[in-house]
Length: 229
Image 1 (cartoon, rainbow, N blue to C red):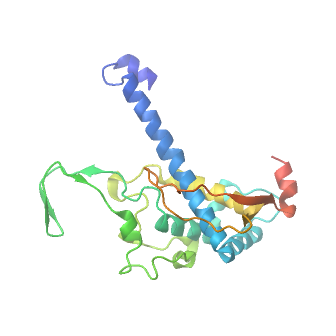
Image 2: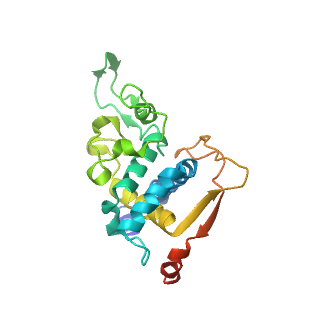
Image 3: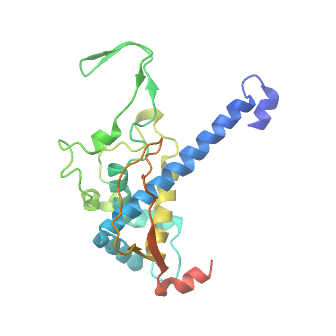
């Protein structure tokens, strides 16, 4: 970007470059980190799901090595957990704002040119008319070959169409790899006498009001693999 600034300083100002960097950092790290935290919260509340995911990792990866990026497509139940987390606790619940380029009518509503348009993905993902028990954490609802049920427009964590999030592939790989390593290598327990607070906070990426605090210990069977890092 600095090289572009040299050739076109009027367009690529310091303010523009700083804004782009902030956007890249926020979109590329914060949303994924928030999703991983929500996923861990859900797994702690539903230990049977955590145990099933760990069993899948032990069966397909073993305990002699760490999970690698190329393993993620071969972990269908893990991918179901990711999809269900994105459905219930979407990092960008209203997606990215768009603007109508011309007058149009949508669902009987007149939308003038220049109107800011927001998609309430949070409401779509919890709509009882299209999801069975929408408030329940049920990763198996996505369980099919590869953990990728054809959901169409029922599931919009990254938007849809030509302006959907360009970082979808990177986000899924990052979330999948991080979550797999956390499940595969460590034991997780809630703090004694405390429950996991699932209150949603305010912000661009819908963080938790109270950060997750847990007891984390390395699995004995994974100590050798961890020591090789």
